Length: 404
View 1: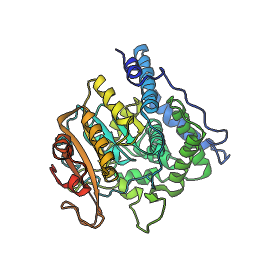
View 2: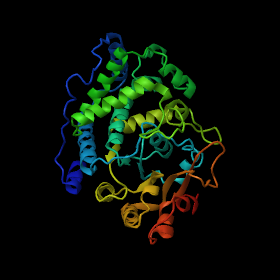
View 3: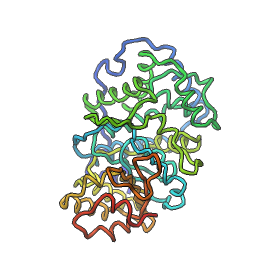
View 4: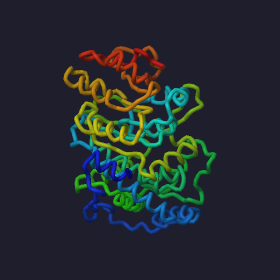
């Protein structure tokens, strides 16, 4: 059975969804001219195209299949949007690389990746090297954010260019970073160019054009959401922080701090720290194998149907980054649905959970000095054994028992 037919069989979807165009004027709200910036983007695309071989007919067919599969999965697996009390454009988990030194040796790299939330997923994907990744989040805004990220990955000629596109800045490709550049150099180069309404408009047009080609069904509110998020990156730059919709006075880490984070040994950085990590992610994004889905972990659609799809493809879950989501699933009726969804996922005895524990008055035994969060690993089969038959649990118990 072909991939497209498999998707259709499991999800009862059409062969390909169509994407609406953004509302008139939204892609270039400033109305400013941006010829120089457009030229820079065109140079990047041209340089990339000049080094790429002409696509064969089989390669073109494969690309078309990937495009259909991506849209079918995003639209077909996604549930309705749900209100959440924060806008997670950037993680607040300062400990997200706490496990980075050990993660690659613990995970079954033949499995797929499942995660939640914004950019910290890219670092875990780069460390675990899955064949595909699925980002399941209760907020539709997170799905839109990952469409924006995919467009930036596809458009970027370098790591620094990626940063500039995300932040809506100009970037001189003649002065971009080389493959050996350190993260501090990448961030410096990516923010060295002008930041104006013209540069933002040019970058936004380029990314919107990419998103339109994905085939995902997007309405006017979706396009407005994408524009609002991209403009937030433009206006706040690397100073962007996680925010609650009701301010609690806590100062969360900046995007710059998150991107510059390293593992406890100092040997491993985030997804922009090395050329190898970035290019792996870029390849996965370009092939449509990082799939953002709107879904509740304890819902009746996204995870159960993802499980069915993975089984139909003969795939298993290698890594499931659940962050601290389980603290919202502890009510007994909801908990039982979450446990059922975990049991339905195809897995091996090496399949891992990655959890983030947030200190809310009780410190985690592995909590590092200066951090409010602790990040730990455990086996999914140990979760089923230890907690599967219980009516509920606590986040502390989930995050401390059977740790690797």
